Image (tube, rainbow, N blue to C red; front, side):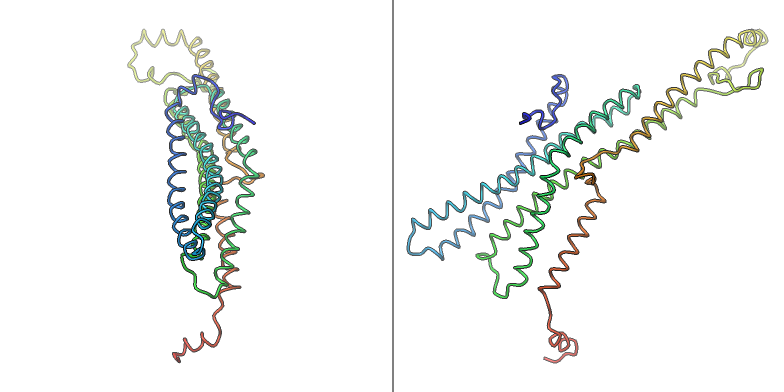
Length: 334
């Protein structure tokens, strides 16, 4: 629908692709490496569990057991690959944007025009807005489905009175691990890029402070004949002047005053540009959003408290200690 480069938000400009080629390749290799490291252990556990299960069920027909065994493994492998690859794809998109945010932080260390910084940040914010718009339904449905599935499993497991072993509980454990890992990968990537986007305002504030302090230290404000403060270079006041130098300096005071006023106007213009850029970055932190909610550390803490509340609610309905047993264990009677 979008094409691979547009979907991954790789800059279409050839120079930018060559500039970040090594970083892009490293992130894509990490994508396949992480996908493999999560699928292979789950695949081994799934195969072992299915082998024990079908060895107990189909003892009379070996061919039927083999066909059902391979069909079960292939269907599970297909579903697991789809779930993890989709979650890892969102993780890859966010990690590719981390490269550009890190480069933007390095760009702030240079003494460039604030308009250049503003245009670059507008492009980064546009990319994050597109990513949020394309993945918001996926993230929302993933969170709801995984939460509902995990609490259904918790409810059945805690309410089950029989023994739970590797044969009847291994499949549930593997499926739970796959779902939780996929959700964690998505939330980690979203929180990571949101943290990078919010950290830009801190970097810009530091750049503005350093530029302002370094500029102020090169000027000294002195009163002119009308009583107004005029900036002059500080190194002129660190020299020892003779009478002829002072006379020439007084004769050129008018020219120095106009030149100092021009320097002051240029300095104030640059100062206001930097200040407006910092205010813009503070008011527009950016990040991955789900229908307006920024996925950051505060959002993750809210999710954690919600999940913990639901877990305690389910456990209160299933894990119930009889009052008589509790009293006897407290008193010490058998």
